[in-house]
Every structure is written in C-alpha cells, then in structure tokens.
Image (cartoon, rainbow, N blue to C red; front, side, top):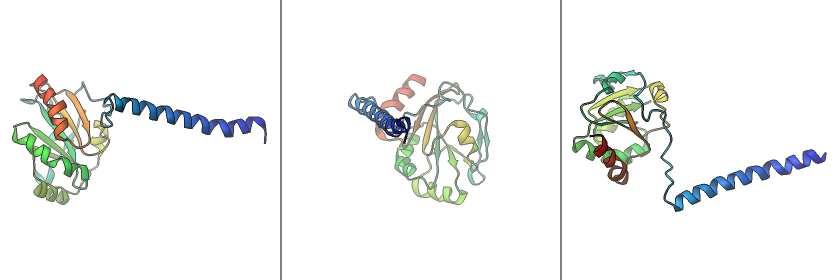
Length: 185
C-alpha cells in the first residue's frame, strides 16, 4: 500500500471524527447557554407571504387558498397535522386552548385519509376554523414543511412571522407565541 493511500485511510476518518466532535461541542455549549432549540429550523417563508396554493376542504368542508390568508382580520395560526402523527396528539389540547381564546387556527391535513382525519378530530377535538386537505403533500413542499406538526403565525397583513416545527406546548405558547400576539395584534 502506498504512503498516500495509508494517509488517506487514516486521515479521512480522523477528519470526520474531529468535525463531528466540534459539532457536538458547539451544540453542548449552546445548550449550556440555553441558546439551543432543535425546533428552530430556518424557514424561507418568515417575512414573506405564503406561496400560492389552493386546497380542497376536508370531507366536503370549505378549503382555502393563499388569497384567504392575504389580510386576515387578526393574527392567525396555520397548523399542519395528520391523524397518524403522534406529536399532533400531544399538541391537540394546546390547540384547543388557543382556539378557546379566540385565536383563529386554520388546519392543513397532511397526506392523510379523509376518514382517518375525521376520526382524529372527533376523538381529539377540532380547534380549526377551517381545514384544508393536502393529500399529495405538494403544498407542504412549497411551504417548506419538514414534518407534522408544524405551525405558522401569520400577521394581519398576511405575512408569515414565525414557524415552529414540532408540537406546540404551554411553554412555547406562553413564551414565543404570546409575544408575537402582543406585537402583531
């Protein structure tokens, strides 16, 4: 075996281990500073209007389009969910509590069977003022959805101001979401 090949066989794994260790160290430092949020994934929509879309309603109900989100009467949430999504079950009660405060929440059912979605809503509550169905998942791709649940905060001018990947919790609602509602109401 040539000396160059031996160096590569030793050097490449060593470089990968060093890079991985540096990444791990950075995450640990951010966790110590309480500056690490694994749900804080970047979104190209923040600061912009939602992309063009038109989705039918779930089980014959009214769907909605991007133009319905252009100028809502007050700030609102658009929440992506699915009946097969375990974290969606975790946030169901939080969404119900938010809806009871009068915050409009529109749902987009992601790659789901209509009957399964209807059963999910019947069992876990329906916090949604309107529900559209994205059975193909193409609209989710255009929104940049990583997975369900995901929630987008849209202000009164129709601009996406915040995106949260994962189930909404009381901590997220009482922290970030309440601040957004105060700022954009």
